[in-house]
Length: 307
Length: 115
Image 1 (cartoon, helix red, strand yellow):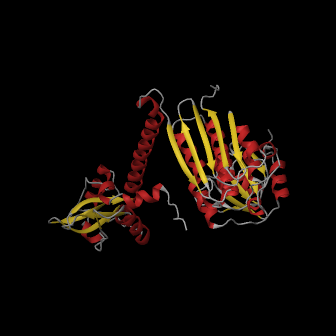
Image 2 (cartoon, rainbow over the protein chains, first blue to last red; image 1 turned 30 degrees about the vertical axis):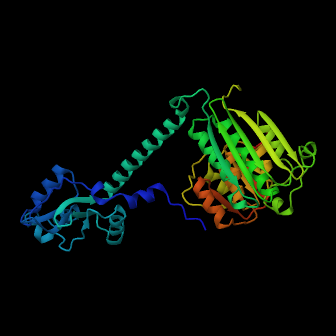
Image 3 (spheres, rainbow over the protein chains, first blue to last red; image 1 turned 90 degrees about the horizontal axis):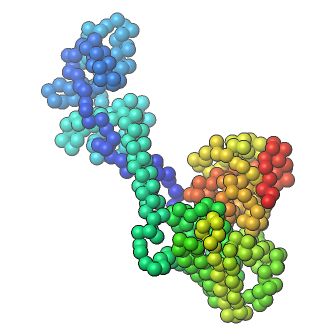
């Protein structure tokens, strides 16, 4: 069974540590700060709440909501200690962002004081900090992907030889429909990374996929797919030592097929695969002897103007 | 046509996570023969099919089919759903027959994959 794929954002929210996303510059007030002074602090610092600290120890937390209650009751002179929340949820620096998200959704609090191993207050974290941290991390990821794509597309300029080519080889197992298409998928991805023209990449992917399916459907021992890529063209060789083709001209006729019922149920084996490969390829060469295996070679030029 | 419109026209239900409902779908093709899809489908199309095995998703990947609708109320096996989510191809299921689902889309102005 395959692992359930999780999105990059889900991954990041587990990877990011609280200390990476928290706000380190903390504004604090003391228990005897008046609500009127608190209002000024919140306004000047453009924040919606702050920890209450006495002699270096955090004793509570006070928020905009508490201030609004004070305002509506016309009581702005009483000290923060009268209105603060004393049972404060905290979170430690080395926990992951997901821990904070869980506390936010479980308790409904809007901010969490962050404490280090010694229990000292070192920061504060809000939902906004987490969103901001995630966006920054995604941006970093995006740049990394851009860079690796850039490097891949310049591989042929970076490595100098008289004839540079990239050789990719994939084993194809017989009757293994579940993994069918993996080779073509990877070759498609490689060409995309190398900056290949999308239409041409699509032709390569379709041709390789049909060749891969042929090996899965028709052989007993499987085979191999090789893609040799250089800046001008990709050469695909699909090789197997399977049963071989009795009559190549007949096999090339649209609709002619020797595929089993099993392959047809999967949506293949209708006798158009080889024609489809020929349509996608710029050059195609098929050699086979009954009992001696099959070798299919196709060439697709990678520049839109042909050669 | 947007994916959300396609789903509503075929009276379907989305079965994959994180689909972009605003995704643009340029044309449609209906087929149970994957080689036909590989030969004729246009890039950016939605595929309507009665087959539910993972090769349908592979075929979509190679042919740059952007969404798949399973007709006659078929629900694909888990492997198909997982592969589709990995490849970012939304899957939809509808109780309609192939004929009806294709007909409704055509009537709503969806382009065919004719060459």
